[in-house]
Amino acid sequence: MILACSPRPGGNSDTAARLFARAAGQRLGLAAPLPVTLLRSFRIAPCLACSACAQPDPSSALGLACPQSREDDSIPLLQALAQAPCLCLISPIFFYHLPSPLKALLDRTQPFWLRPRERALPPPRLCRIILIAGRTRGKSLFAGSLLSLRYALDPLNVRLAEPLLLRGLEEPGALASSPEASLAVSAYGQEAAGDGL
Ligand SMILES: Cc1cc2nc3c(=O)[nH]c(=O)nc-3n(C[C@H](O)[C@H](O)[C@H](O)COP(=O)(O)O)c2cc1C
Image (cartoon, rainbow, N blue to C red; front, side, top):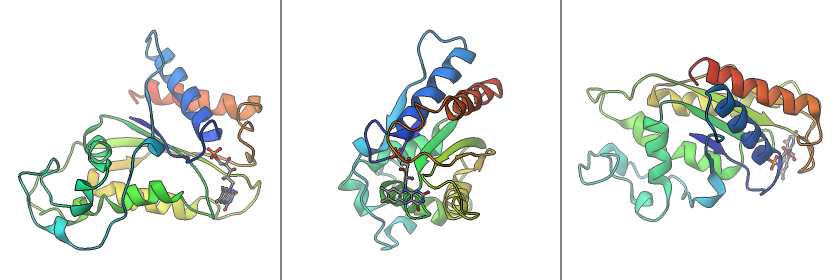
């Protein structure tokens, strides 16, 4: 799953997702780019910290109860995080962190933290990460986002690959008009496909 996580249609994350999908598809010898999923087309309700997900619920899609998953579109995304053989998340930085829809999705992985220890883990997988920031400077620009991603994905048996961190891309067309940044994204997609994604 390639998940583009910006609320802004046609922005830099969308461009990066397209470049990554095309490069990875080409490297895999596919006729078409890999599909891209847009997070903004899903409604993701916040975690209520109600602990309902601590209770097993065989009737729910994930085997764990969550009242919010009856109200929103989170289940297919959580299932993909749990089962997709390989992942790539692409997101802008908003106030030194991830935009709220992606943070909400990460918070909703709480059932996996609370899952009973005897339940089998999903298979080990790698997640590619592309983060895009407007600022050109800032030592800790990506630090909070990377920590949240690492700890939210850990109970899903997902490890973060070396991330691609892009700075100085503010306007929606900034990535498309930067040959250097575009090449870096395509190379990252090719490398991911070369490693079996
Ligand atoms: C609400 C908001 C907060 C932002 N906060 C930051 C920030 O803390 N640091 C930064 O470098 N850029 C920040 N930006 C700029 C975006 O990261 C930048 O415009 C990025 O290219 C957006 O990606 P997109 O086109 O995929 O939406 C912010 C933008 C918005 C709209």
